[in-house]
Structure formats: structure tokens, C-alpha cells
Amino acid sequence: MGIDDAVATDPRKKAMMMLANPNRYAASIITLEKALENFKANKYEGQRIFLLAKTPRVFLELKKIGVPISELMVGATDLLNEGIKLSNRAFITEEQADELRELHKLGTYIYVQHAPSASPVDLFKIIKE
Image (cartoon, rainbow, N blue to C red; front, side):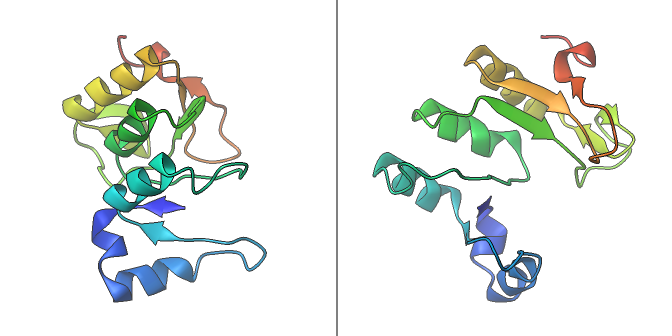
């Protein structure tokens, strides 16, 4: 499930993103508001869901309403060579770092891994808690 307001509300962007979905999996791209509404209504109870989002704020908002997010992988980001460097392909803003810190305080293990072949690195070995 992709959670992104800009993509979910733009039919062209949404259609292009859905092309990347393997046929054997159900997929959706929805707004954060719709995701919060659906999770609050237990729409996904008993399902295993792989969540994708551009920013940590999405995961923080989900965690705050009780969505069990035990771990979070920060992969490649759309920020390049600006902000806080997590890896050669991942940079975050100070605001995003604060959101990740808060998410961590709520019990989520966060690591950085930009590719399956790369070793995962605990986020807090890179930035201060």
C-alpha cells in the first residue's frame, strides 16, 4: 500500500505507480487521511500489509492511532545531497529526523538500507537519538 496524497489524487501518477505492482499482490495508493480512516475502522484486520511512503510523518501518524509498526526501513529518498546524510542514496531533513526519533520512542526499530544487497544500519548509529 502506498500512502501519498499527491500520487493518490493524480490519476496519471497513480496509474504509473500501479504499473510497478507485481500481479500476484493486491495494491493500492491512498491518501494519508483515507489510510487513517481505514486503519481506525479495522479494514485491514488480519492482513499483512507492506506500507510505502515518502516521509516518516505517514508512519508516525499511523503509529499514533495504534497501527503496529515494529520496524521501518529507510531506503532511497528523493532528497539527494541535502540535509542529513543516512547513506549515499538517502538524505532526510531535520524535521524528518525528529519524526523518526518520535517514532522510535513509540517502539519502532528503524534502520537504513538503500538496496537488498546493502547491509542494514541502525538509524541511531548515524544520527543522535
